Image 1 (cartoon, rainbow, N blue to C red):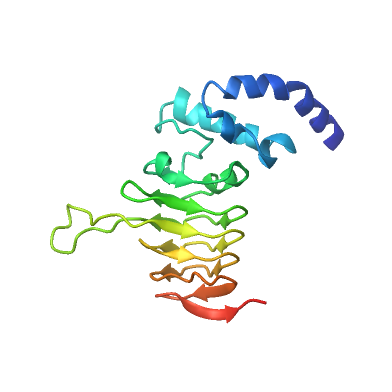
Image 2: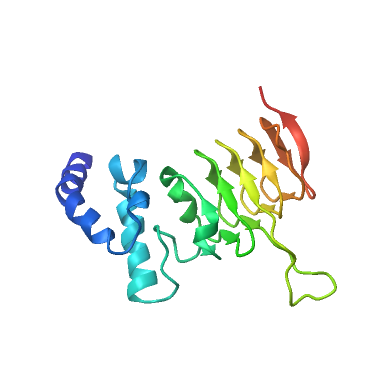
Length: 188
């Protein structure tokens, strides 16, 4: 059965690729999800259907699930191999006032929030100035976690599920968790 699916994918791949180029930037139609398996095309067709045809959400330069919120895709730096992070349900990338850098190989679980600007305490209608979020390579952000403005996570950092990360851990190779997050374990 897998051989049949693989051969069908190989046959239709060039046509799918040309079709998807009408909706997404070319650089996001490459990488492991488009070259070695067909998940990228499934995400792309689903995104085209919900965002472009049904118009339930604004179009994006790469396949993004309907339940994923991205304030400004121009303010995200991500490798095309990591577009699977935009398929997790409930993810929230609030970056209209700051940049979000996501390192290669980083995994973001469902219901994670990355927030670059908070509301002003004295005037809740306005936002403070944005501060960039930088997540290193091969990090893992656990389910229901929140990363607040200005946080920098070094390479190989694991954020435990349900954590609120309020400060940076640039050294990397650590497990952080809690509210507010603190170092729970140092990795070898």
